[in-house]
Length: 434
Image (cartoon, rainbow, N blue to C red; front, side):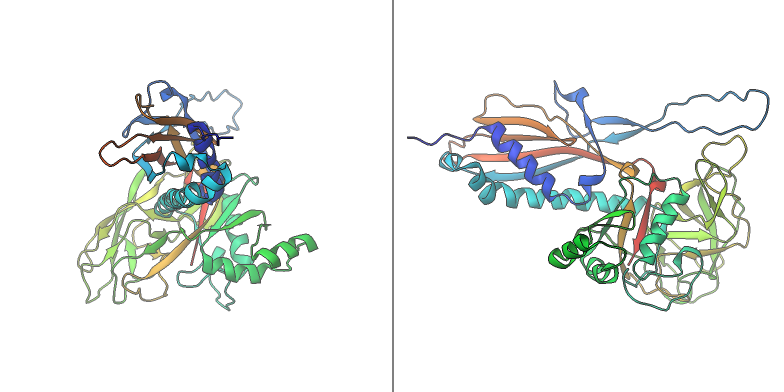
């Protein structure tokens, strides 16, 4: 009895299943599949729009305070064509699906999943402004460090509870929260969390698999793709707080801080995209009630900036926008504007007085799935080929195409995912620096 050939659809569905199982970070985040391109097929550069929830303010006046409903969307450009190129013969298609998956699809999809996860975590590290922990200290490490507000402790479980508290301060939903940590932090945190408020079944799972699972309101996951932030090339005595200050008062809606730094012999140093700063006296507000959280507002630097000579003002581009909360404002971010002479503190430096040039710090992340999205759309189905199929699973569209190479008597094959990334609500996530 002859063997039955695996069909394109069978192969692709198995590839999607294996890809999904290998994803760590992306598995839990918002994924948008666009059906608008399902007929003609999307191409690199296509843009899809993801709708955001509307924001309103609450009035306490007797008279009606009618608000306009402004539907807002985030454009997501499908800029990345993730592709794995393969060669497999007609004979290999006679294998059982399990054997074919083990030999060919599993290693290919593991690599593809790793690349997709890495890109998402890199964007998160460049875009999420909320941060807890101390650069240079691995979460889960025992320490007697005593600092201010949410950074008072970075031992397990305090550091993860601090991240959860910060997310709650920004009205992040309690359900479906996740934490992704790098392998070193995961190893130390397993030990730090073992036995803490867990039943025997959970303890057994931790011991056998060396994993945390669900704890402290989060689903924990280990991912070697956690982004590592390389800070600017700073040297000398202008590394952290007390050495930078505001030189120009902002106006509401600004996306820049106007800064100078104290005298120092070093010039031409940088603050890179993805670093985080805060300003004395500028506190964050809860997006729902527009009341201060009591925590200084963190700002992420959105473009690498070179610092001029000491005493010279320079512009530092930041996110979120500096919008003062008010009685008829639905999207306020701060309780007050930065004012002249206010101290600026760099949160992504490891020392209270200096910064090591180009030091590297992992950016673990706690998040609600709706803080960002991975959008995909159907690639165009080619015609006149030996083998082709297109399938969608859990918001990810994938295409497989195989053709016969008459010159080399081979069957080259490609598996493609056309995707784009976008931040939806950065406030629904919090970095845990290491």
